[in-house]
Amino acid sequence: MKSKFLVGSALLLAAGTAAYAGDDHPVVVAQLKADFHAKGIAGMDRLDQDQVQATCSFKHSDELPQTLVHTLQAQQLASVRYPSDGKFLGDWRKGQALAESGKGDTWKDKPGAPNGGNCYNCHQIAPSESSYGTLGPSLYAYGKRRGNTAETQKYTYAKIFNAKAFNLCTAMPRFGYAGALTEEQIKDLVALLLDPESPVNR
Amino acid sequence: MNRILVVAATALLFLGLAGAAWSETDGDDAQAQIEQYRQMLSDGNPAELNEMNGETLWKEARGPKKAGLEKCDLGLGPGVVKGAYAKLPRYFSDTGTMQDLESRLLTCMVNLQGFDRDELAKHAFDGTFGTPDLVAYVVGQSRGQAMSVPMDKPQEKAAFELGRQIFHYRAGPYDFACATCHGENGRRIRMQDLPNLTTTIGAQRAYTTWPAYRVSQSKFRSFQWRLNDCFRQQRFPEPGYASASTVALTTYLAAMANGATYQGPGIKR
Amino acid sequence: MPYPMRIRAQLHGDVTAITAIISHPMETGLKKDGDKVVPAHFIRMLTVDVGGKRVIESHLNMAVSTNPVLNFKVKGAKVGDKVEINWEDNLGEKGFGESVVSVPE
Image (cartoon, rainbow over all chains, first blue to last red; front, side, top):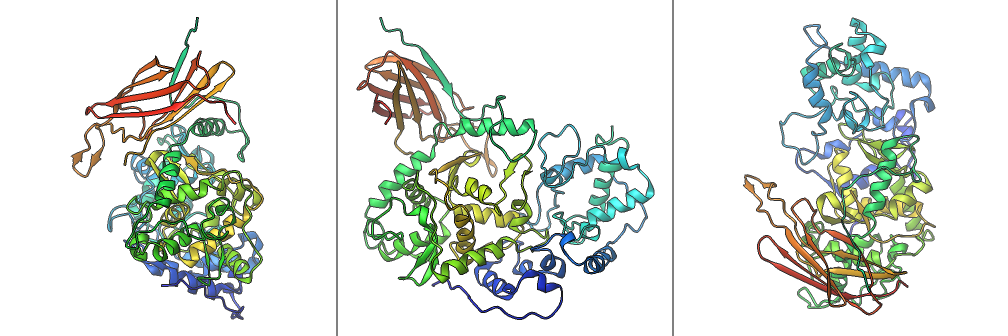
């Protein structure tokens, strides 16, 4: 079976955020859908871009019209589901294990298995872990610097749930929104960052 | 008389401090150690075993047609292996499509040797048909050559642009595109440096050191394997082996590396 | 999959740098394949002879990685001297490779 390139002429797109994805966007989507296939828990629906993904493929937040950015950020913030018991702090020890684990959501992962937070892939967190990435800012002394207030706890929870609510085109995944982490898991990560007993703050 | 001094050293996985070599990150002691580890790895590469075996396989009469690959045209004419990899991917008029090395190997192994294309693709990353070793052999024959991926034909230009768009395509539950990790300078994931593939220097450094022997897996890994494992970690569904999307992406990355000297099979952690 | 040993023996001044790349699984005996432990299978002993003289007798163990790359420096060898490397592993299997001391191009 010969693989085919779907080379089409540029299409005029309806006005809107999709314009930021480029004129050839439908051609790209069609080619990807022709060439990729579902495997394990990774289905083809994953190739469908939502508005945020399409808008942020080629541009950073500060390169987009700010009214658009604020509208979409507000939309993302509205998607945050806060804990029903109003508590944000979980177990920082469990948070540590979560931060270390890079498991979850790949086609090699078992369906229903708990995901990891993938945090150390991108962030420095506790000083004892020297194997950290630099894709995101350092979170060392996060609680010490910001203070363990109710407001900070709520912000931190929302940030992990849906980071796009605060910086539309951030590289950080939307862990709660995507269903990658549970409410309890996010609370454990909030505790890792804010609990005064956590190694992050000692 | 002759005093024979012996200094034996077992290689691999032995870190030491060293002066920092060229790097994209700034002032990071870990960086110096990573560079030292890389230098030690490059002194003797198990990929040489794969290259040697690949050369044997290239010439061996195999498959239902009991033929070797001596007539395989990798872009420079039938049987010309030397320098071919540095000029791939490219447009091939016999198939009417853009092809990278692994796509072209499929064509040759199917047409010349009679192997089944789907079976070859299914086992591309294991040793069943010797694909990794064949790749090692062919890329080794471009050692020392300047990367010169052609960009003359409209199909070649279109593939470059399609590849660039795919590179930036954010999708999946984590909103990852290739660019999410490979679009900035001086970043790393855990302790793994991430070359900025949107710049010439980043693309050159990355593309000239793949395919490579992966020490932690004790296996030789091709470029299609590298793309496959990237998409897995991006939480995407799986790309078809040597599919048009992967060839376009390879075209973008390889052409960005044009001008750099290809270093032959690399060695990675 | 066992490949033939690859040996480079290059004379720089009065020192011969020998690099041997050996194909061997070097299993530690600690790895598991599902529930079963993969049995230990590693090179225990390796010898290097240059110009007919035994120059190295090396005792390796399971800490050495798969497909080991070994580097040796030897003094007193001449261009044209034969380099012979023999190994034996913990299961009694043996391997062999040979090359000749040469000057780098």
